[in-house]
Image (cartoon, rainbow, N blue to C red; front, side, top):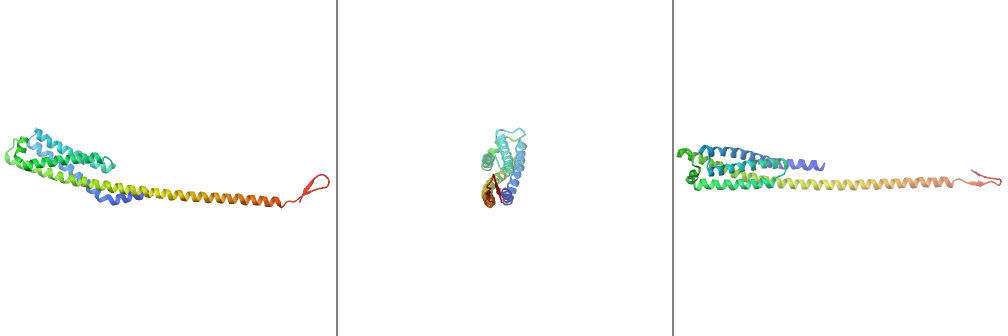
Length: 214
């Protein structure tokens, strides 16, 4: 009963943060998938810089999937945090490269498209990178809050379960003691009854060859 109460209180207290984490990670999956498009549109066979961007998006996908698995199994939080931090570092570096060195970044991408299309695709990539960075940061913070609250609720449920077990043990010990006392009292009563019945008999020895009871 204690575990059921703890799990229900856990679900009620963490339902909104869990929903937020789910939505953020699903949005990360969508953003990372969409961000691959501009890289391949700029150049179907990406340059090393293009593959670096693809690896950042792949890390984002993996971190989002790890977060979803962690929400389902309450495990792999360390792996999710490592992937999330790696993805956020990639987002920050790529965003800084596009914002501060846009021309150099476009040259590294080696696109054969005209200048206007390159700028549009680069701007789209910048927006997606910034959105992924913000969503990843909020998702990681929300996941940490949910995990901390889950651990606190689990500890409270375990404490309540231990208290119920101790109370039940004391009650069983008291019942056993009362049963033993009642059994001992019954044995004493039977002994006293036997002694009274045996003391009420009188044995008379006969003068000839025996005795008689009356």
